[in-house]
Image (tube, rainbow, N blue to C red):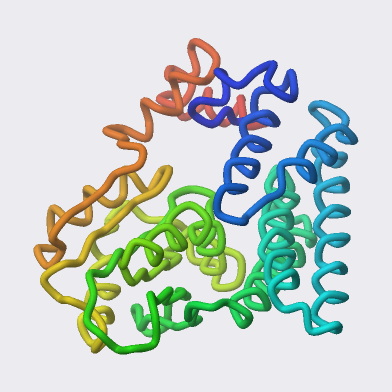
Length: 295
């Protein structure tokens, strides 16, 4: 199984399996912005068989369904704040449940579970005090899905944070890591998914690509048409492997005032090799050896 950068350092935290610990901590970390409840997360983890990806899916999915049902119940009683909070957490838990399903790309539960993550997020967004608007950004004859997270509905021009993830994140997850914190600090925020990410890979089947400047420029074109954007103060944030994509984009896109690479990746290739077995680099560089390894 592929080792994500940094997972080796989480071995023994919650799970002995480093990747399980890393992904559990990833979700727990969003508790600060309403994307998780620590007790719900630890309870879920206690039921998971360490290293068993099917157990991981079943338990996180069960928690997500339970929290979504609570949200539905709260909404039926017009307890909109409690409903919103539960829908947000359910969205994050469905995303977490789906994560290891990708070891089998043909697993039909991938799209089903991702869709429930998106839909529960939309249910929460509809109850939010601040506008969270689903939008489509024109892109190469199609569109890229995004959320506009606004400080308010005044229409006042404000600085804009444009944010994207990298390898496995979603725009819904970006709300908990970036979006909410941005609007609370006076920034409007545009969270989008590009090729290889979220809805774009799951429904449009468009794979990732290295020329991220070709992805970001149409997003900036879209942003510049929005009346509530201060066009001189646009910031691009690349999150996770997006820390590689974003700096590349700004080498060609001069309408961006600042760029944040979180975390910064000089070489995706090197970051993969440093967390995988010795000798993997020679296998990857040898076509015949790669075929034998894959088989």
